[in-house]
Image 1 (cartoon, protein in one colour):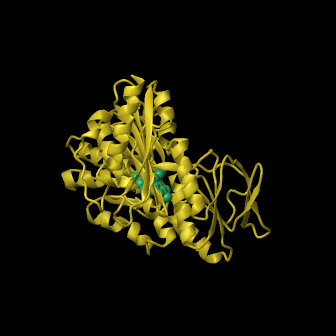
Image 2: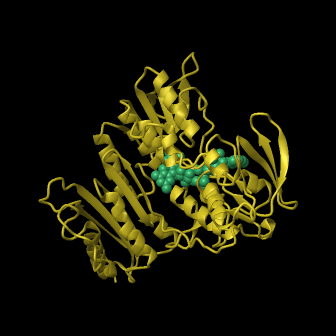
Image 3: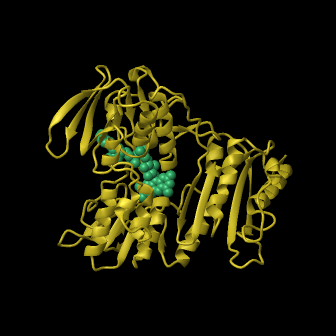
Amino acid sequence: MVIGGDAAGMSAASQARRLRGPDELEIVAFERGHFTSYSACGIPYWVGGQVGERDELIARSPEEHRARGIGLRTRTEVVELDLRERRVRSRDLDSGAESWTPYDKLVIATGARPVRPELPGIDAAGVHGVQTLDDGQALLDSLRETPGRRAVVVGAGYIGVEMAEALLNRGYEVTVVNRGAEPMSTLDPDMGRLVHKAMTGMGITMVDDAEVTEIRTGDDGRVRAVVTRDAEFPADVVVLGIGVRPETTLARAAGLPLGEHGGLLTDLAMRVRGPEAGGVVWAGGDCVEVLDLVSRRERHIALGTHANKHGQVIGSNVGGGYATFPGVVGTAVSKVCELEIARTGLREKDALRAGLQYVTATIESTSRAGYYPGAAPMTVKMLAERRTGRLLGVQIVGREGAAKRVDVAAVALTAGMTVEQMTALDLGYAPPFSPVWDPVLVAARKTVAAVRAQS
Ligand SMILES: Cc1cc2nc3c(=O)[nH]c(=O)nc-3n(C[C@H](O)[C@H](O)[C@H](O)COP(=O)(O)OP(=O)(O)OC[C@H]3O[C@@H](n4cnc5c(N)ncnc54)[C@H](O)[C@@H]3O)c2cc1C
């Protein structure tokens, strides 16, 4: 039995079905929404107009899953887990009818819940989240219905900056209101500042250190402005991108133990830890905490790339095979217009929190050989452990090719390489693709020098 019909849940169900036919394993999946296996990651590009149709974001519809022998129940919400009796209570959201269904093995893949602060006006017409395809559709409908052209995005994490681009593409005047000092708090502030500068250059009004206190509405009940402690920003539409928390309401109520970030804790096979789960409950995706391989601490990182991998691992194990998920190094990429933003590993504050002493180096380079047309600037910041020189983290902000360059660093982190070892990496070079010294190699060389200076 699977709860949650998106990345983690349906990857698990599909993988289990690949290993075991319908005669050997019955699979039932509950999804409270209309859609399954959809890409929330694509919502900013659908809203922005790069992707034409909602259905392009659906990898596999409920009908396609059913055709593969998965008993999918959409618009059906699981409202209670009974771990002792091994059964769940579900509610048909259209008829209201409730029933209990037994399970032998249970997969919790309930995802994450967007943060929605209890502010006056937060539920007004014209205020939108972007967590589901229904949210994306509601936002697009709202944009079509509203003559005004002023949009305020609350939050400047990757979803906030991607939505700022989407609204800019739709011709809106965009203001991003951010609680932090710089956008993209997954970067160190010095790298976030580069994002801030670039977004301002794109015509986006950036408001930092601002706490939203109210969403002001007109007589028609529609949003008119976003109010902060110090100012008021006129708005015809508001998009919320304030972050997410693990959706573990059911698990908590059933007494499953949760980690310090509110996510479920699993072993390497993605089986929920603790006697309460009875060894027959698995969990994956945005509702779990993952092991950070660099800091060795549990973290909550809500990313589709992890959710799909968790689902594969769970499906293999539930289907009688064997697979494990070792952990993550914290790689994430995004973009706002031409600006690419990438990070992997630890920020300075993560290293401090983990008790690691570190050095940093930051370099400016270009995406192609300087003489080759189209060479664009790129800034790379690298962190390495003091004395040992072990790579701890990399952040890259730049134009073309910046984002995927971080994958080299992700591999180096996973392999536990030192920055000295990185300087000898045999990376590809030709003038259209990189300078003869790739920006990652230049950063590694400078970091080696910093390590030596501190030893
Ligand atoms: C705008 C946006 C952009 C993103 N971009 C990226 C990106 O570029 N790269 C990346 O890696 N990740 C990205 N993500 C994150 C990614 O979409 C998620 O990490 C991923 O969808 C998590 O998959 P999941 O299966 O764990 O959870 P979800 O996708 O949240 O699916 C959980 C499902 O469970 C259902 N459910 C929950 N509770 C119940 C219940 N009690 N009963 C029945 N059904 C239930 C929900 O309706 C939902 O469909 C983005 C997310 C958003 C919102």
